[in-house]
Length: 179
Image (cartoon, rainbow, N blue to C red; front, side, top):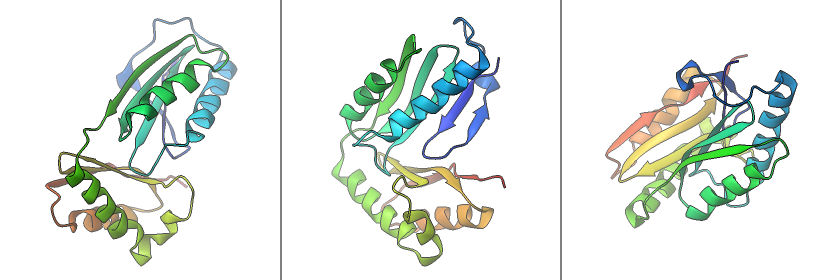
């Protein structure tokens, strides 16, 4: 059975051969699909989840692995707690990185948010409650995560992020949604 990885805030499920096979008891496909949906639902309900956090997970059998980056240490433990209380989850491997506290990074996050979501061609992405373009800043280096509608939007978001004064580098990991 292939591992399934869900990237927030999208509904994109990716088969991930790089994650390998689980040693866990194999869950029936319908049970694993239910777990994928329930984990996604519970994580999206986290009140501290923001555009500056990137949470991903994979479900293998009855094991859930959490990965990504968060600005608030409480969010890391909150994500683990809601997932481990889902019926059917037997094990949670929490690999979420808590980003270091930095006023410089906080300032860059706000400037990038304004540069991306305040730009008229990208304002459609500011509409949903859970923003599809995630802005991760660590020690002055930025990473864009999430899903956009077109290659042009991906490139435009990258250009807008690179235009922010003070950013050392921008890695554009945005994916284009398949129609």
